[in-house]
Length: 106
Image 1 (tube, helix red, strand yellow):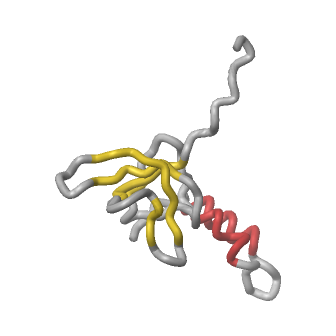
Image 2: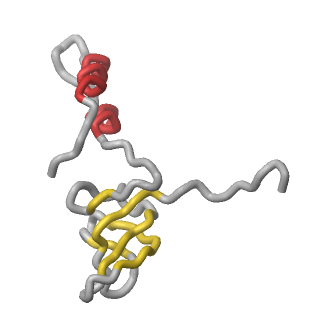
């Protein structure tokens, strides 16, 4: 699975996390650096990446006849399954947009 990353940013961040004994700080502190940025409105094929565990996302599903639908769902890492409904084959996903907050003139 190939995911694009900003190599210069990664190297810069690795240097920032390097400690004097030649080891690196905990993986959790470095991992966000190499996770691809996920922008609302951009589809991410499931073959490239899966969303964070149980985070609600917009899913594009495909039925047996090739029809596509959009539905909100989430992926459960422990079960390696999508929770989106019965017989749903999720092919891509994207983060949900922020909820509508209204406008000043509303």
